[in-house]
Length: 350
Image 1 (spheres, rainbow, N blue to C red):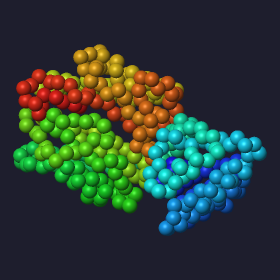
Image 2 (image 1 turned 180 degrees about the horizontal axis):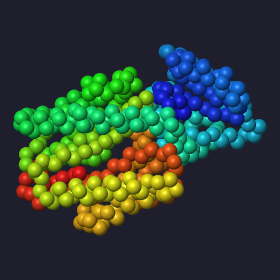
Image 3 (image 1 turned 135 degrees about the horizontal axis):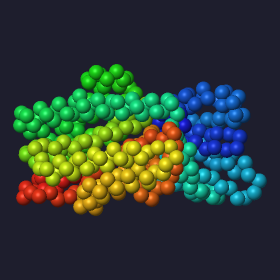
Image 4 (image 1 turned 120 degrees about the vertical axis):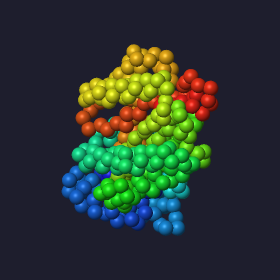
């Protein structure tokens, strides 16, 4: 739940005109208890807490909450907003999903409205994102780059999956790279990704396979990772070129120019689509043959959610940008063919 700057597992929140109902475990209720008095004084809203029993799924409390919703209306037409795109995970949320959809309530998807409401970050949230980004960048610079250099120079055989494990451990222990952040506030957004040898997937959900890192002349190594700080996400992805041809180097230079252009176009008052369009314009001008391989999005908003899809930087998003929005600008060329007879370096992604 983004409203509190931290994650609450297995927690349901329902807003009524004069009450906010929370269904949570004991730890969640203990934390939320401190909000009851200040919220009541500030806005005249009562916070009602429902504790999930350790052995139960909160079914009885859910019935009480739904009865409270119905009691707020005099007519038989009850409308409740919900986040339709969120799939329920865990027995508590699955039970709530079943009860909600089995009730006489009319459901209305408020996903876009909630996303827009949370898209502008306050100073504390921006600080958390910056700390997460600092950790991610530090791991890349102080650990990953030297590690890859050592493997290549000493011609070691190291699987992608091993690099993933080592990098994840480094993210979770910031003091290993002299980053002064508490390990208890740190997590990963996704398992670090290492790819080489002609097998590339630029999505954050990609996996690091058990193949050894491929670093022969002409090779590319793609690495991506993201650290969280106090629940707020960050992301960085880099391509390492090893004695590559001019064709690959030029493609990388064009991608960097497109990336810079996309960032420069992110300004308050502009449209989200203008960022991606700026990148497209660079590729069309500098390397039109690569345009079909450009990723279809230039990134998304980022915060407690790794991907704030409401803030997608694509050619169709006409959303007006505002001060305080935070973006992960992520562009790539996916699976284009280079001039080579070696299958491990012929199909590449940047």
